[in-house]
Image (tube, rainbow, N blue to C red):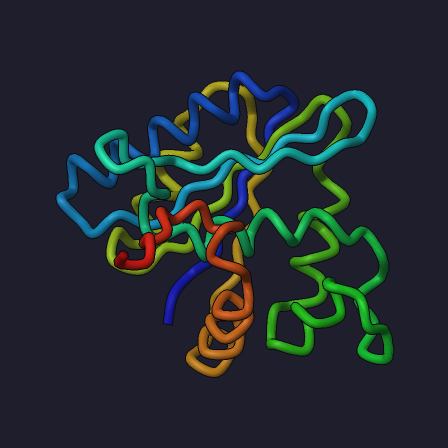
Length: 174
């Protein structure tokens, strides 16, 4: 089981600073890196997904899958009804809390940004305490992922093309 924490800021600078603080918290704790993603919405309403990367390899920290999945949550602003075929409905069908998803999507205003992270080893309390201490008055959303939901979401991540995850591809041998 793990926790999904998304903290929404009014501006991108505060969200990127928060992402850096969370990465530093992970490094100081010596835990396995988790995906940290900053999702921003510009003044025209376009969404951008920015993940923390390992500077030595160029690959996303934590593998990239959870970061991409968190970013995808913001792309479908429709009401996640079970009879719908949209991305939001698929996330709810996988077990993500409908109210959590709707609140997260609605809270990201134009010009704002959100920091998202799946938390396992670092602990929800440490992450929440760090976010509460940051400037910018973040609006924090949190949900618990049970084993079934984690498995279903992991299956969804498995369907994301490798190129979208930003992982280096192996070249075929000559």
